[in-house]
Length: 173
Image (tube, rainbow, N blue to C red; front, top):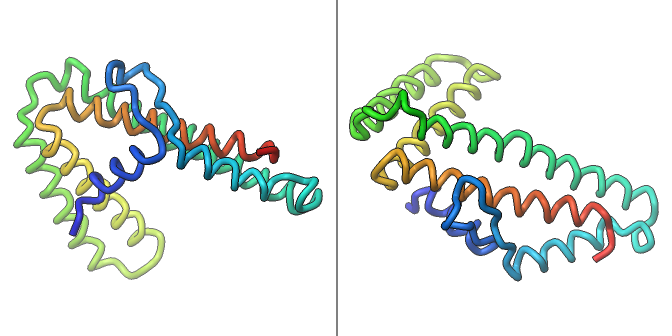
């Protein structure tokens, strides 16, 4: 089974190429598939094609997606990457960090199996999955700085996807 983080990075590379020369402040370059998707999505928000009611509703959904990706996901990834570069983590042993995340994942999975369904079980599952992905990122990157750069690059690419949704919300391909 493929590593979900690697799959995400591969998929994002199809849509937008990160500025690897400046991971923290760079801007990803949209690729042809993202431009094509933006044009197709724009058709559904074009009020002259689908009418005011549908076009307006679709435009609202696209805007909400763009806002969620930008305000929640991109900003969170940038914040985590910034913390990985912080002086307080300078002496952290990478193996110790990945081992701790693995232990955390095991504890959360056990707790999830003991809790009946509902929001608590869902929160435990989400946190466990995050610990797994974050541990994989650290292990694959080989250093905190490289992991931070990977997160910054993913954030760039997701910002490009959010921009495509913002543009598609305008409804004119």
